[in-house]
Amino acid sequence: MIIDIPKNSDFSIHNIPFGIFSTEDRSPRAGVAVGDYILDLAALAELDVFDFNTAVFEKETLNDFISLGKEITKKVRLDIQHWLQDENSILAGKPELFIKQVDAQMHMPVYIGDYTDFYSSIEHATNVGKMFRDPENALLPNWKHIPVGYHGRASSIVVSGEPIHRPKGQTIPVGADKPVFGPTQRLDFELEMGFITGKNTNLGESVLTSEAEEYIFGLVLLNDWSARDIQKWEYVPLGPFLAKNFASHISPWIVTLEAFETFKVPGPKQEPEVLPYLQYEGLKNYDINLEVAISPEGSEEQTVCHSNFKYMYWNMAQQLAHHTVNGCNINIGDLYGSGTISGKDENSYGSMLELAWMGTKPLKMKDGSERKFINDGDTVTMRGFAEKDGKRVGFGEVSAKILPVK
Image 1: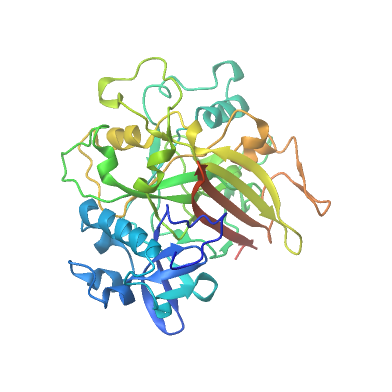
Image 2 (image 1 turned 90 degrees about the vertical axis):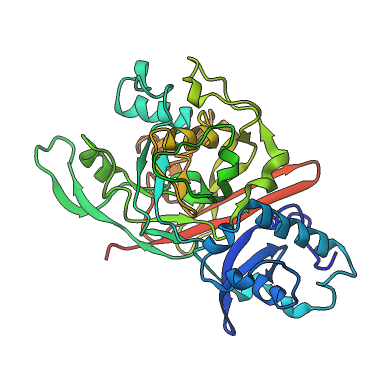
């Protein structure tokens, strides 16, 4: 192996995720994560090892690289895997091609033109229905027939590490008949997975479930923050607005869909049977371990959630098929959120709303404090990885600190 990769690294030889990085002497450019290092793709391209226009590696986003198509992007990944394992390859004896991740700054990996957030975990939707509606009829009548979703705000999606300020807006106090204005008192995280599209469609075209994977370049971790009290007041009749558009965070490395091929698993049985355009064949869910940790300011980190992407009722192929069935066109770099990913056990719930059950069951922290929702100074960190037969493929993390209201 050209580079020593720690045994438990998310960025194993089986991964090779793409991202955008910079250093003091290197402008933002494309790279791949290998163990604790980044392979500089712009520098590698200077060795004339690729047969396409490698100016795409010098861009500040991966959109142009992704637009080359999977025939090329898959070959780049496979070539790098081969070169890393060949002691006599083009990478041998060239330490200048590798930068330590700790010495680099990560940037938004893609320009996101559009963002859609789904609501596809049956456990999460059921929990929310129990809290806010009828516990005996927690799911709305449409939920098992369509992958429910809404269009979100793309401009406020930022990369891991960028702190955000507590949002403010209108809320309705308990028992009040008029709203008040101020900072949210119920700031929450939402544990999600996001997928990035890698092909365009034209207006009027639809994507079938059988071809959806050709349109998905890769996955990122997504923390889709939510202000629960603002949302409760504003979401009727049109849905989330200020409660969601203040910020969402994604992890900096896009893990290709191909890297997760060996981690496919069956999804939950869908009853009643879905309409023909949502039916699919084969394995479309993915066994990816997920966790969330909270670090109070000045205190140690505490893991509060263990979940898994395999729990999703609606899979990515169904989400993309539904999104485009009406002829909605999609573009390279669009982001699609899974919706909060919750499991059946209480420690697998993917939001504070569920973990603390709307504030009635506060979480005890290691420093003696309690959490019903997220406090100022808290850092929320999400991690995700798949592991099987000695192979590990992961994302690293998506992490952000909450600053006081601005």
